[in-house]
Amino acid sequence: MNKLDQLPTGFTRRESLLAMLGAAAALAGCGGGGDDTAGVGLGGTGAFSVGPITGIGSIIVNGIRYDDSSASIGNDDSPFRREDFRLGMVVAVQGSPVVNGRSTASRIVLTSELVGPVASVGTSSFEVLGQTVEVDSSTAFDPSFSSGLGSITINTVVEVHGVAGSTANRIRATYIERKSSSSEYKLQGVVTAHNATSRTFSIGSLNMDYSTTPADRIRVTPAVGALIRVRLQSGPASTAIWTVTRIRRPEDDYSGFSGEVEFKGTITSFTSLSSFVVNDVPVDASQALFREGTIGIAAGAFVEVEGRLVNGVFVATSVKPDDDGAGAVGGGTEFELHGTVSGATTSGSGGSFTLTSSGGVVVAVDWLNGIEFRDGAAASLTNGRRVEVKGSLTSGGTRVNATRISFES
Image 1: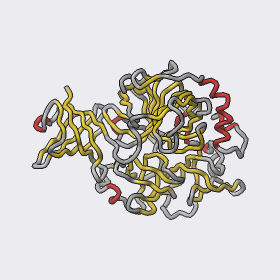
Image 2: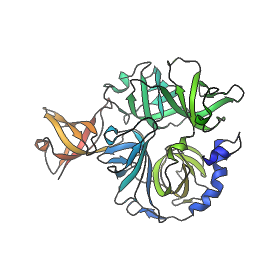
Image 3: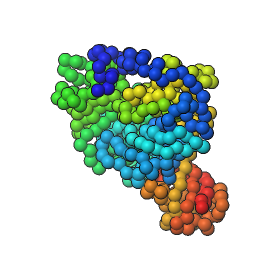
Image 4: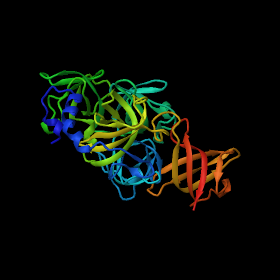
């Protein structure tokens, strides 16, 4: 049983976390040190990242390139394979200490935010289950959405990967996938109302009923102000009240991770310098050393945290801003691809090809005349050649526009 499940009913999420972490923080120690080249300070055992995939061959998360060839991979829906990874998918990764920006992953878990039917579509966002999904130039779409946001229509069922937005019930999408069918929908959000007698609650404008939810699928009782993850019976976007099939905490996604690790990500929710959330992972920094002071430690900042994972909560011993912000979520993200070329074509203005990573991930790549080539030229883009591609997403979010192509031996 998760220790938080044993706390008295009515505790807020913050009170519950602090109650549990008061003793746990002491176990983590209060050392510091370490850098990107040496890996984790504190004599730690590895790296931990939660964030969108910004590179493949192997996967890159928060600026760290993880060799995923021997990692266990899964999610809470169905079996998952290396070739199913996509740019923008949000994953949690645990691996070996970082050396020269690289780590060997031992475990990878997918952690999408939302599955449900589209209720409305705007010019830069759409709504699903009362959540506003924000789309920008770094949002990747599966190829069935050939025009990106312009291909999304009302009642289409989608799965959204991303991180919490700047305000409640908003998600900054990093990858959007079409779901042909789904027996359950899911969302994450802050409880805004709860009636213990009728066993109903709300997240924003969405009303839910858990009176028939099996007891073993209620991992936490809803409480106003608590951040929870919910599964719902599928239905039309216009459903007035939704039947709940499961309730749990976001940190349950990370309960299987452990040890002293280094963690990079964006602060997606900020309560105080002692309590904040990085890419949906709750952080207790009450015993942490702020190695470069506290200026800039706020919502939206990209930070590097060292410490220990305890029951899905990161007990920090050291916090500092990350200077390069590699992997930060937002417009202008640069993607990095490694793999082999197939189907290369050229035209008067450039060309295109398909890149396939060592793990079987396939990405469509376009390039224009005038881009930088290293250790080769456009004529070297022949089938079977290994290349590294750096670039950004096309306007539709289904392909990568290369800004540099390097040939690898």
